[in-house]
Image 1 (cartoon, rainbow, N blue to C red):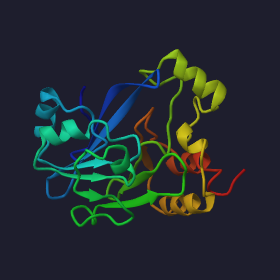
Image 2 (cartoon, rainbow, N blue to C red):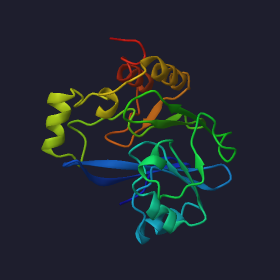
Image 3 (tube, helix red, strand yellow):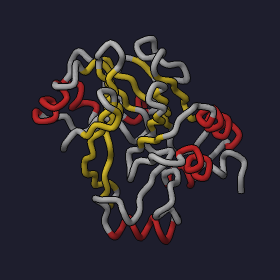
Length: 234
């Protein structure tokens, strides 16, 4: 695993392989350096000694963030690697992993540690999956995990099984779309639409996502198309 600089001296990402429900694909950790130099690890990967060495070159890891219903698996390894860091989780994870220790729940209100730099929205109302979207204001970067996946011909680390499901069943191959768990259960579309509308009000022009290729051009257009149904489309 190798850290890649996304925004000079501010944001880094790291891709790592995932095998889940019989499918092979990749996930992405995002690291944000706050203005005071401390690091926020968003959806961390498995943190081994080699990863610790790379991260330590960037600064002190102060915050571990589990931003979505399926993005908490490596929090324990991050806690072991960085025992002084505070852990923030998306609501609902505490029911899936009651033994996992954490300090705070994520919400619509960013904590004081990063409130001046990052805005948040808790996307609620869906049946199977929740997520907290992050907006890094200075770099105009939206950071998501499952609200948009962008997997297609150019994406590395996927197998034929995932391509079959994404292309034939969900019609999201080469098309940025929400994860299947969203599409199978939008639930209260009005509530979801209200949350997504708040995200669309942010002045972002790039999107870092956990699964697939980041969106570096026409980001707002891509987001609106991806969320057409809950935003009131057909």
